[in-house]
Length: 636
Image 1 (cartoon, rainbow, N blue to C red):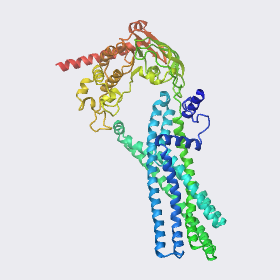
Image 2: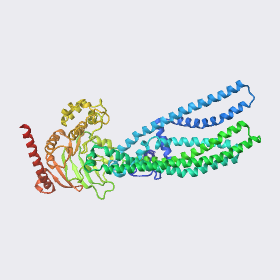
Image 3: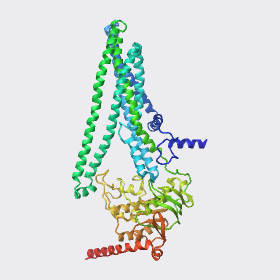
Image 4: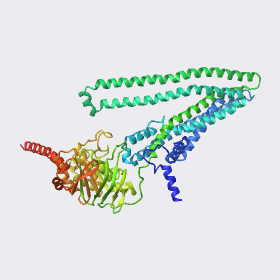
């Protein structure tokens, strides 16, 4: 029974499927029914059962209100010819008007509530989407296919209330409302004349046959113009970006950009014009068709009234019902077609949300959490999506607990990829990685991540207070003493004290106009402070001093050795002299270990490491001489 429950859960959540799958967990494509079951389950979880009561109430009143409006003239006429006293007639008509207004008020209130509820529901789904973005396997989400699928899924939530999951749910109730209204009105018209009912059906079907291709063309043009607008916004953004401004001026790209602007604007205007012509043409044909059909219908009803088969109140009621019949039927067709068009948003969203996280997490706990671990790789291979060969190939490596290990090599050797494999962000294409003898594939990623603190080469800050950027918790929840110690060890404490609000200063100006932007070197120190604050037993530093000059980098690495005392340390640097303090150095080439040993041992071998070191040494000597001259000038 337990296994069956787990399988049902996997089928529901999409776990166990490989990244990139475009079908539901049972192997079939998503159907409209599947999508609505998913959407309603999410609606119930986010907004509760009351959401369905609001939608059902809005639907019921949406049917009742047009009927009461259509029947009002017939009700007044019935009262006038009933022979009742004026006071009684006035009371009945007044009561009808009060009822009509009460229904109208309640309907408008529920419709507004439903609109707000569905918008809140769509916004609430953002959190689920963002959670999925950070759960999906790192190598997949960084790939071109992963980025494309994520962007397509985002459209379901961020395209506004006119598309995506919000309108998808609303359209269901629109179909119910129009369908029931059509049945009610059809029964009433059919009682008067079956021929009349068939005539009305024929009119609507004729109009639908004419308007359907027009709507499809309009929808296609809207989608095409969305791409044109995307191009326009891209050009607008790049034309005023500081980063691209230098090249635009230097290479005289202004004329090229203006021409591109003109071309995209012309396409937008042309499509907008053609899109507007579609409804205009359809409206003319609809008016002609309605004039002919209404003439026949009204003539038939007048003839029936003259013959005495239809009373005046009944005549007025049928007139209102006939005019409303076409509205219900056309509304039904349009809603169904819009569901089909919007289904694509739902399909692409669910394809992304149902992605598995690669090899799914196990349930084994990490042995000896918080202590230095031995890391062992057995025949590990890793290949990026679309890659022709492995980035990491058949790598066998053991990193003893507490070792200082340096990974060096030319660009593209696989250093950064290896760090992501070591800390669990990537899963091997083949082979296994062990942490103290445990297969990391059998551990929850949260367990693994707690054991690693990594400083990547691409440093950035969130537009939150500096304290939150370092501690990764909301301000006020951090350990202030540990925070200050981390900033001090990272060499950033003095700079922080000079900030306008100290550690409470907001980074960047995205959310606070008084925010501060740190330099590249200061940013790297802040990332180091974050790693120190986390206090994990394994520390990986991936080019953490790229923004520093060689001399400053060498000094910084010497201090790193003291900072991570008692921990397992893995260092990556393209400057070979900076890692001489490490116990062991691995020279990577083509995703494999080409050479390994201490700095002295590798220099004695006279291989690729020694050759690259000697080439860099010439540059370092020049840098050191230049730095010394500057210091002498400063002292002078």
